[in-house]
Image (cartoon, rainbow over all chains, first blue to last red; front, side):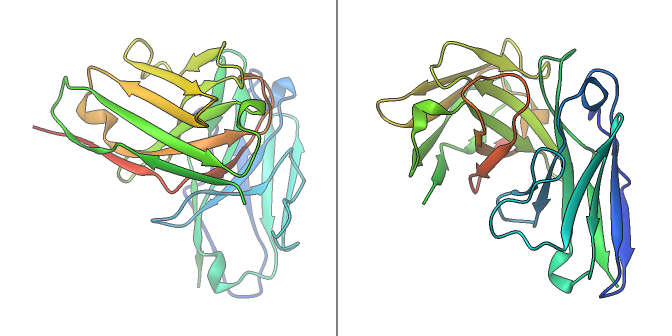
Length: 111
Length: 123
């Protein structure tokens, strides 16, 4: 089971701002390991959205932003667009498991 | 352009075996650790295994430890996972992923991931 907890779903109207939380523990995010975020559309490859807490890969719109505080990370999407409707996952490293961990996933719905 | 192409998925009976492959191109393959990530039907993403760029170090999720073996052939730029004693709960789309560093542990993200190959374990 996932060790990083996310809300199952968030929704917003076009143009609004939504945030997704990712809560970890003292063996992963709280231990200083970075948080990364992925966007996943059904039938496609998951796509890296934010790496190392707050960095955007080339080509990712600046509407997407990330942050980290303590044992939690957060993804914000401002100016929500219909194309943002997808599943979003956080990811980190866990020293107790000696492996990588994903969040439980959050489905973003554009109303 | 970095590309990852998985193959080898299919239908297998419980207790059976399957080997997945991932052909990589467009980057210095041996400079990066590689991983397998899966998604079971209706479930979220799950990390399965990682191998270092040199192939010396390997790590597995508890759910597959002792049954799956990850390996790589740097001369062929190909990643593999040998899956034995398959169970119904191993049914998933398996994605090949490039780690952001050579080491198989520690801070790293996955980019890119391939399109995936479907493994179905059923009698």
